[in-house]
Image (cartoon, rainbow, N blue to C red; front, side, top):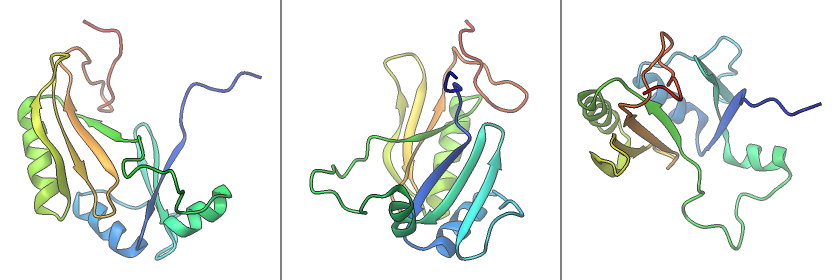
Length: 148
């Protein structure tokens, strides 16, 4: 069997599931009915499920500790939200900040011809907000790769 080329679920480790859920709800995201209040929150998206779960419980489930001696401050993982225009990048980053998130990189033109910035949720999980003029968005808001 080949491993399918897709992801089904991304789980973000958070310090406080209730507070993290409140932040994502303030973005306009609605938890799925399968969420368990205060324990784990699921958000269905067009591309997969985003979960918020206690960092300690996530580490325990993965069979690892929450702190590794050689772990960098940057975990080398980001999530991305592609939008249709540069103005939408600026608007999304501004709203993210107004709702309690932070900016790690202000939106700027990229070397590949797009426009993006990086934001963090209150737990430091990084998201890129990007406009890629070479990837039109489909009806679900997902990038169409390989289009020019």
